[in-house]
Length: 233
Ligand SMILES: [Ca+2]
Ligand SMILES: [Ca+2]
Image 1 (cartoon, rainbow, N blue to C red):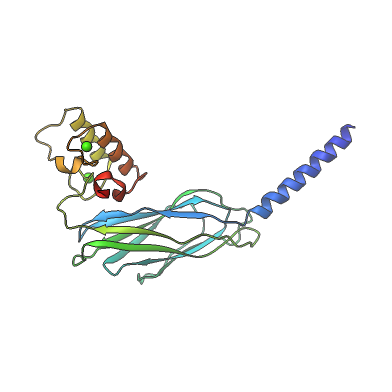
Image 2 (cartoon, rainbow, N blue to C red):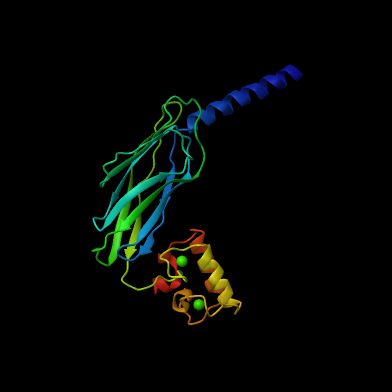
């Protein structure tokens, strides 16, 4: 009786391990978020692996608007087998990881690479598209994975400030979160150069807890600048 039960369990485990290896080649999901900047600014776009079907190789190309210049790319180390891309940077630009000898799938998720763009000094205002075009990915059994292409918009603005950038340094950082909290708590110090207009990111004419929430999300990259209510009006 006991032996029979062990057999059933063994069969089940064998079956389920087969299921896992079969389902390892599948479909994954990449994501990128848009950015806003002025001509001459540098903007970073993170390419995130939201869903990882299990892989040992990954290859995609980055196509971008001629008003943008790709300065460099920075590997996060999340995927193994980073292959130094071509020193000649032009659109489309190939990015790849090949951990070809690995027998184990990498299943991690999160930021895999950061693309650092300069908005050209003579860029026209408007939306510029960056597209991640999937080329190829394989799992440890040689199975092909599929990913959809994704795009992000770099919005080039001629405004002298960006909503959410309270200290006017062209970036969204912990400093901006700190300044909005100080403003709402009415603890701002006059000697600090804070842009109050940029702080009202929901456009209701006041600085409140709602603006704190949006700016904290912006700094944490949970939302893009285009998703601020004031930029959607
Ligand atoms: Ca800032
Ligand atoms: Ca507000």
